[in-house]
Length: 214
Image 1: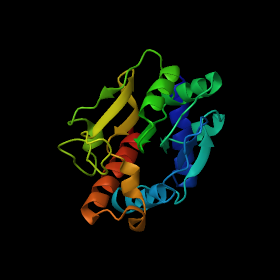
Image 2 (image 1 turned 120 degrees about the vertical axis):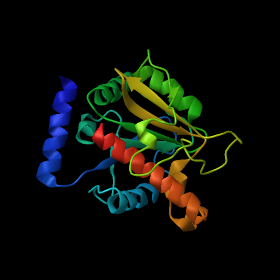
Image 3 (image 1 turned 30 degrees about the horizontal axis):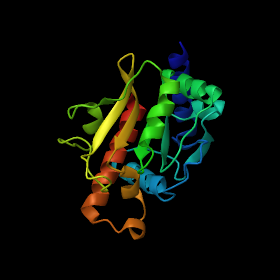
């Protein structure tokens, strides 16, 4: 019932405002939730141009415990350091995700052990599972036959796309050892080759497209 209400509110918002919104998740613990400031605006521009979305240019910042998180069909989370969710924050994020929301976590190097610990507060019974290469998230407007692309080198590990599934629905996508959001940043920030930046943007656009559809 909560999910149906959430979806109704989202659809009502989209039809009345003719615009979609993405939010950046603010969290406690000391990690730099605000990192990669040019990433999402660049991804939004790319998605609007190539995937027929109509997302507001600048994302909103929303605290993990804020009930207004329900206003956003997708929230994005990144950082390098510690993450901490209080009991109330974990419950709020839990309710958001089971009601139809979607969380994308981008490993900006160093967040892995913290995000795995904190997401256990949100869903004690769920485990991150590697998402198969034939999953729809890799097959939206853009196709990634080999799954999650490698954007930045961290520990010489292969990139992996992990997910949390609730009642068969993918509610959280976690890009690990890929660092998609670094690839979305202005070219002057990381000076990545054009083809690497394009892969990052295309995969990010797929994630948005999938979240809006599901």
